[in-house]
Image 1 (cartoon, one colour):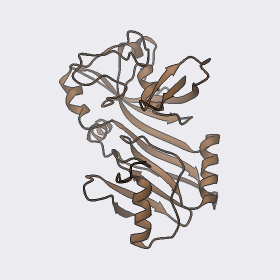
Image 2 (spheres, rainbow, N blue to C red):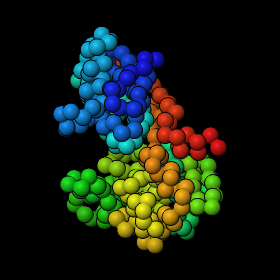
Image 3 (cartoon, helix red, strand yellow):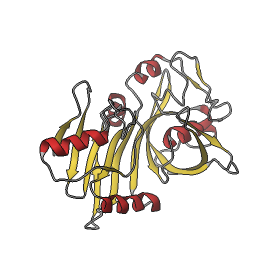
Length: 271
């Protein structure tokens, strides 16, 4: 396994999990975009291209196959040839590429009322999401909205904790589609907002999580707790922990797993 230093000035490092003539698989750190339009901002594409040049590794360009939001860490596969990019793109489109995430969620009263709290039982969420590119924001809409795209995921609760500040859980999430901010929006809409999410949950200075932007009615969670305020500073508690796909050249099934770097997510996973 080759350690890849991202850049001076960035506190995280990315690990190359696998590399050959067709693909490169990485553990993307939180805070680093997959691909940025900003010239001076380091992103995974430029980092990997520099790695290929500086380390004299197996040649090739870098093609984006799928993405993780900038605050999300986890496993990503990049193609190094157009042929590999096309094949992996088909796997993303037909759903054969399997993406598993772990997240720490706040268990709201709304989630309890609709029964999505039983341990190890898989639940499926289907919503229709609209992306607002100007605000870099997505929201749940009606299926008849022409701008809305169908979003599907399934999840199960692996562990739960009841603390003085509230109830929290470790959720395992499998994406069936790949929409903008999909996990964050759908889980919040279901009453299970992600810990540390400042876009789809009000800021730590507010007294309640109202979820007005994702319309889950009165499924509020007390946001005044010291636990939530303090832990939210460590970042979004979401990690793409597992990725499974077929190698574009050999057809061999490949599976990669990582341990979260997020301190809170790692701590909850070990309890």
